Length: 317
Length: 317
Figure 1 (cartoon, each protein chain N blue to C red):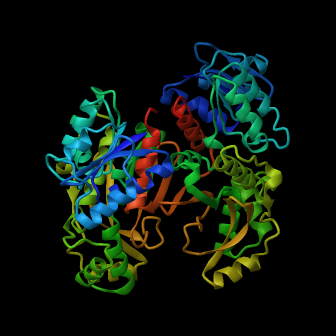
Figure 2 (figure 1 turned 90 degrees about the horizontal axis):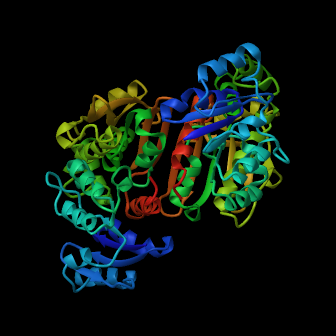
Figure 3 (figure 1 turned 60 degrees about the horizontal axis):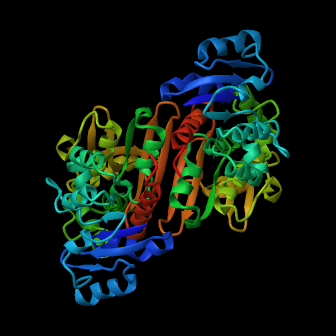
């Protein structure tokens, strides 16, 4: 497949670096200011080196990437809320050109799901977005395989940064601010951590799961989610939990009634009590009980793996 | 889809009972001595009641099911070793008629994988067998989605009966014979438990995983597996493990060098230390770290769920 990659952060860079190994050719890469385009395939090492030294991936305008020759647009620009631009516009352009789209950008899928599905329905191209939820963990494809009608609830730990902070607070008895600073030093939390610690990131993932479960019968956006973060959680709450063989995790929950993210008490030996940056998802099924899937919920190569899995699924169902 | 179900045990009965809910019609059901056939769809309740009261599902010869009108043959007869008959013959008949085949019967996939793939290649029908490994847990489809080339090892707990016995021995400090009798009373272990406790069942699942990972470059059968069961494990071994915060699990392992089933020490808080009849599989990936998937590894409706997922995947890749 020929891939045009829009977004040159950790995920976009990994997609460009690994595409050859998965048998694909990258014909274009765009960052927020420029693009590198070559119908025969760009040179991944040279383009990423150009980005490192010059600050931009190439000499062309970023719109050149959208107009390039490709089978799949890989949309990995940063998630934005509300109108979900510029990501939504990128997806629209590709679908109107009858190209396939694979996203890691949560914005268009969480905030404008109905419009996205309408555009896909009118296009010969398809849209897939496994990488928007849980990084490497195959959550959406497992829901599809089991059939959304046979999944009654989904819950899990969907933000690695918040989970790292809670794990460290619980294990070391440290306060939130102290552990946050440590996480920022380690690169696990961003300078502005609000998207992760206030629960927004996990909530967007829950909204996407809710949209997949609803199969078009209802549309969810971030406004439908009840969201509470971990940024005001006192260390004493974790100590109380520990004394009762429990711990606290930022749990996202999706059922037919609820889309909710909040700190919850879970048994210390529960599958939900994953540590560090790991994510876990539990699917409750009608005929097969509970299924747990856990793994790395973020990271460049991990998210790229989910993108390549989606590319592999194009053309099926 | 029209389904012909061969095998009327727990799995076959669940497939017949649930088919309508998944939008399918069962046109034939066979047990070892008879068949019920109706091109417009058999009556699930009536046929299963006939089986309960008369001991057979219907008045026709069992070969009538193989000759019936169907899109998918669901092969759920008991697993047999060596020539894997009569299961293999059922699959062959269906593929030669250009029909699809979905199996829960491990024999043909573990013992005659190459022949099976050759038959499928010569047929307009496809063959799928997610239900042969780990019941409801989507192991094989996850390997396919990640691409076998990007999986370096698979390990896990693949037999619920053995795991139930080990969990109970560890938790209660009881001996093997005592817990086995309890498991037999509960219906968790069969009257002749050798297939489960000697490791054969887990080994067949590992052989199937090895065949999927090898992508035809090498063929595995049970003879290629190193197998050690739990039937000679003394309670003292579990006590020693416990004193060191470990426990013992019957672990199946598949890598490019090894197909092996044996009792192994694992940390008590390890993901591999699932309790009761649950199964877990760990996939080691090249770019996405470790993925854990756990759930119910056996049972009629659970295995039927995997069969319906396979039916849903027919026509894709």
